[in-house]
Image (cartoon, rainbow, N blue to C red; front, side):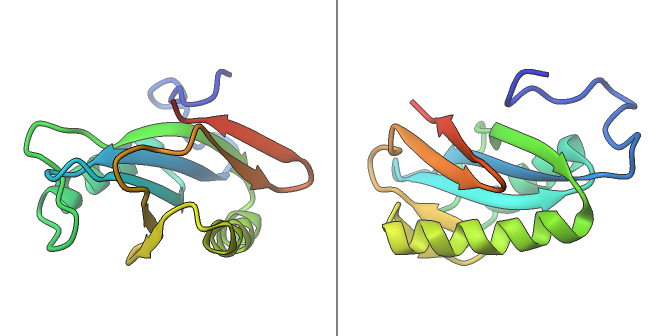
Length: 128
């Protein structure tokens, strides 16, 4: 499976897995917003983010924009939550951007070229 591509429809959660993901959008002021999160259904969660971030009071998404995934990996539910917390803290230490509510990072006028997700190995996700 290529990173960032969604599983085939109906195959999102065949192994009772959760997904750790990295995604992004650009708000109405041109701020690049990066997000790390977990879900058991990538497509449903993408639609929820799009709907909710269009109405957000801080860093709202333009009405025609969509939330996009950059990377995802299936893991157990326990591990997705654990690695989400660890990597969010790592990103805060690395100052990838200003931390915003709901596990988002305001990266200003451009995303960093890459971000790292550390699980058992380091995954480098290209954002450019």
